[in-house]
Image 1 (cartoon, rainbow, N blue to C red):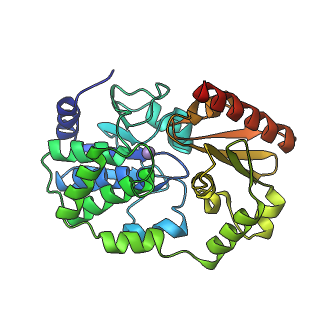
Image 2 (image 1 turned 30 degrees about the horizontal axis):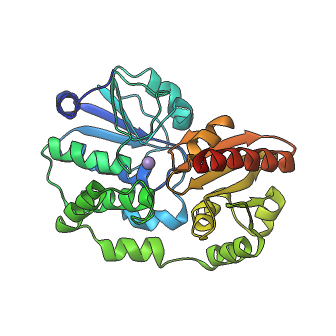
Length: 323
Ligand SMILES: [Mn+2]
């Protein structure tokens, strides 16, 4: 059932015990949305826990200062369970069944998807990030908009908009950023950590990417085998920036990275310039996401065929746009 901000705030206000979840392989928006809501619920005097199995990558961990995330579920008979930034049940990973069996489920999300439904679903795909939505919720809850909460919202905003350059960036994204900075979000620290703290490993990965990417017919891409990934001393998450980086090429309309995360298990990440719908492509490979940023997980022992199939779909999407 879709709901309104007021009803959503009522549900949170009426609950005593709250569990919060977000999607696995958490990105900055997952972290920002779930943790900002966690601290808001704490501020309201709720007994609140936040659960996530996956580690936050080393590149992100310094951003959050303290980490209240629990890996093991404790059944406290929660009144409500909330998921943020999660478009499908499978993305809840090990907590999928726990969430689906909650007494009352609340889904807060900005993906245009109907796969994950709550008893109360607040899904608004016009927002750049789930963190941008959480700003509205936290305002409606009349929680003190502390520098800590403001910093988390800002982290999510910059993450999903790629520091306000993705096509999902709106006037409201800047408005919420403005409110965050006014409230004391530590943007110097956040920007330093996000954009000026690359490790040698990441720079080496960039070097590899720039030496090995391909571009043809407005489609830029890079394929990395599991063997290569190991040689580079990297994991899939270290390469999450590849597709965005490849879209910065002037001639690129669509970009993608295809990374063999585990043997025969590929992680596809796609980006598109305005007017190029990469969600449509990712959906054909069993994935999803947003119009301008999408992904999929694909099992195959034929990477070359997979790569060619993706390029074929990209070409169809380009033709669609140009006709
Ligand atoms: Mn998001």
